[in-house]
Length: 210
Image 1 (tube, rainbow, N blue to C red):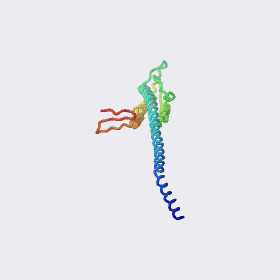
Image 2 (image 1 turned 90 degrees about the horizontal axis):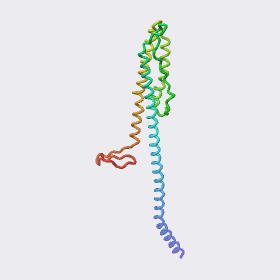
Image 3 (image 1 turned 60 degrees about the vertical axis):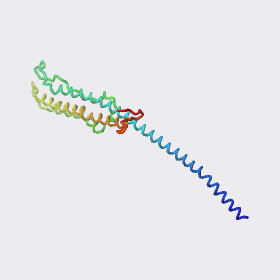
Image 4 (image 1 turned 90 degrees about the vertical axis):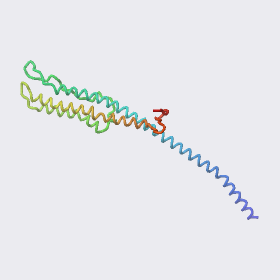
């Protein structure tokens, strides 16, 4: 009798266990799906935030690069005026400069310098230091009245050199910011092109035929 009871209970346990497996599988699948959904949501949220940050940095880089290009071009033009200045005779019959030397100041720049590449920022920030060296070289030039030819030669040479450096920074070096900006914008848009279907897709855009 006892053996029969034990056997009967064993069969019931086996049957109950078999009936629980679908519920266990369903529960595990639900948990896995929930965790996967959370992970995907986190992934796409992070990617969206990264793209937004990259777009903001690109916009700030374009803004300060534009400011610097115009500022350096104006400074280079002023240097050209000094470089071509041969002076004029004042009332004492002494040759004096007709053009004042420009003052390179970045105080009017409102953009964020931190978005620029370190090398580019250093080369632009270096220009006032170079101008100081140029002014000291001009002051140290031996010049004799009344024409002060040596003074004017030193002045013309130093500001020709300084103006060229400024225009190189503006036209060549600052283009790095634009090129970096363009590449970041292209990567941010994440265009995908399918050669077979001839369809161009962009983030959030409908397929376009080209």
